[in-house]
Image 1 (cartoon, one colour):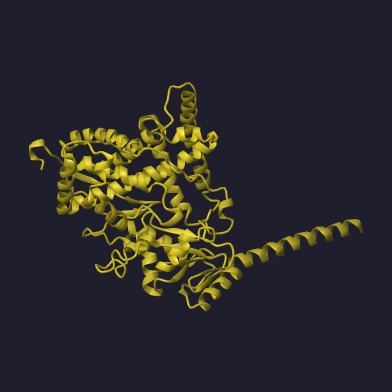
Image 2 (cartoon, one colour; image 1 turned 90 degrees about the vertical axis):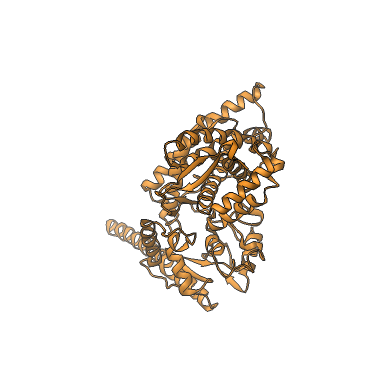
Length: 477
């Protein structure tokens, strides 16, 4: 009798657990998504129909794999159909204000300037999502770099001169793939200006960061599927391994630098010194270094890369930029005061990130039903801000509308959460571009294939082979 009673209790607990889990799964993967879909449609918003098979996510992944298989020919900066074919089709079918699905999560596309202003201004209501799948493994921390801007200029000059000497040798034997050199350049500038070391001392970080970026790009496709971040996948395991290695390298630098500052053998006018002055823990400084490394290194390398590609394609703009550089600096090294006089160069460095924005999409979430414009956004809906779709929209960027609304220029974000690496990146890019124009004329190599691919930034899939021709002193303007 007692055995039968115990069996009944166990069976009841099993059944209760089973039906509780089944109900939660039903709510998570069907009832809640369909409720959110009805809420959006009642407000007049069009979009795709939710399916348990995650059809939208499968279409996004399928088209993303197919698109990079062929380069863009002939050369064109109309890259949206190539980079994001699924979103391009969604917008054409449902309009700019529409929704699609990341698994069971609806993503509402926002391209209206008034709504964008609200999203970027009301930062406590519209927050960045923080999925557990990648958490703080790539970058965390919000740093505010204070200090003299000449530090960036000096560091960039030193690093660029080293790269230029290498290009001089390589240009004698034909084309030069500048993509890995630009990654090295921006990494070296970052190390000199922020860490007080040369890039060679931490060069093991770059391949780890590039792998981490690639893995994060894959992980982001699944982060809105409930429970996926808790699975012990190979992606998650490798991300943690890379994070451990990067922290080890940075921790060694931080500890050595802290010891040197205590002994009076090092200055404290860079990122590490700033952290030491503010009493930050070693862990805090490491996280800030990781954030600054990504913001300062990755964004600048892709900005310079696409700038050299476009100037190599459009020779008249290359000539105009070079003429301005010579007028301001002649053959001298650039200085911070002179950089502010480079109007044409500044125009170019605004146009390039419009066409190839370093941050091409961002997302926001809400924790309670929140008014946005004339709609109510319920929790569970992701707000998708597709900067690259906005910056390529012909209705926005026609000749008569190109400068009317600054909120449509979003390569580095806008408002209180503007990209922390923007100023660093633009100063560094101006210096590097100035020195390059002073020393070389550039043409696209016949082997160049125009194939931008979406990582966390936009990378050149096949590298950047250029024909670099050394400018002799007698040939300079």
